[in-house]
Length: 375
Ligand SMILES: *Cc1c(COP(=O)(O)O)cnc(C)c1O
Image 1: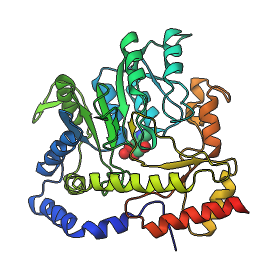
Image 2 (image 1 turned 180 degrees about the vertical axis):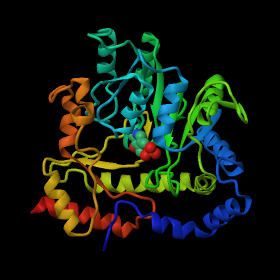
Image 3 (image 1 turned 120 degrees about the horizontal axis):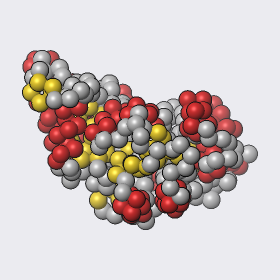
Image 4 (image 1 turned 90 degrees about the vertical axis):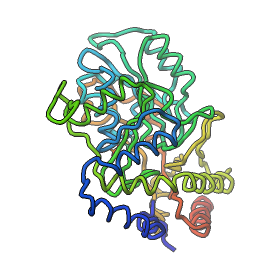
C-alpha cells in the first residue's frame, strides 16, 4: 500500500464531470480573468463563512499583502506575527514596507501566544522599531488562534487584526467562522490546501464595506472603472478557470472537512499513548479543520525515514522557524529568542491526512507508526 501526503488526482477523478463542465464553460465564454465564475465563487465563499465580502485574488500571498496594504499598513508601522508559519505570512508584511515583529507560539496549539503578545505590546516600541499597527495571527494547521485574547490585546493597543486563514477554510472559533475576527482575512487556494484551485489562487474576506471596496480596486490597478485609476494598485486578479474550479469544489468543502475531522479523530484515538508522541491539541473553542495533522516526537527524523521506506509520505511544517532564516537576518533575531517555535520546529512531523484517504490507508499509517515505536 502507498500513502501520499495528499491525493489531488483521486479527488479530481471523483468530481471530474462537474469540473470538466465548469472549465469548458470558461473556454466557451472566454472569461479568462475574473468574470461570472469568479464572482459566483466570491459569493459562495463569503456566504459559507457568513462574511459580507469576498475579493478573489491570485494567491494566498497576494491576499495577505493586499489586506495589509488596503488597511493602510506600510512604512513606519510594525506588524506582529509568529515565526512558526510559512514565509508568505511575513513576506506579505515586508512587501508593504512595514517591519515584521515576531512573538512566540503557544506550546499546545502552536498559534500566537496571546500572553507574550500582550507583554510585547505593553513594552512599547523598542530601539528603532516602528509602532505596532497590526497583528497577523495564523490559524495554523487548520486550527484558529486564540481570538478572544488576541482581539482584546488589539483593541487595548489600537491595532487592527488581519487573519492568516490560508490553512483554515471554514474553520471556526467559538462557533464563528474564520474571516470574522479582524479587519480582513487572507485565504490560499494552493492546490494542496483544504480548498484547492488548479493553479494559483487566493481570496480576502472582510465585513468592512470601505476596506472591501479599496481591496477590490487595489486588486485591479486601482481602477474604479475601465482606465480610470484613483490610485495605484497591482494585478491580483483571479483567473476565470480557477473561479470555476473553486466554485465547483466549494460544494464539497463541508463533506471534505467532516472526513478530515473523522480521520483526525481516528489518529487521535489510536495513536494516543504511543511512544513519546505529542498529538495535536484541539482548543476548547476551536473547530479544527485539520489541513495538517502534526505530531511531535524526539525521534522525528528516524520516524520519517521509517515511514518513507514503507511508502508513507510525511512532511515537516516547518523545520526552520522564520527568525532563523537567512532571509530575516536583518531583523536581528537569534537562536533562543523564540524557544517554543524552535522546539516545535525541531521535532514536528505531519502525517498524511486528506479526504480521499481510505480507512485502510489510515490504519496502515497507524500500524506503521506503532511498529516504529515498538522496535
Ligand atoms: C499557503 C500559505 C500561504 C500562502 O499561500 P499561497 O497561495 O501559496 O501564496 C500563506 N500563509 C500560510 C500559513 C500558508 O499555509
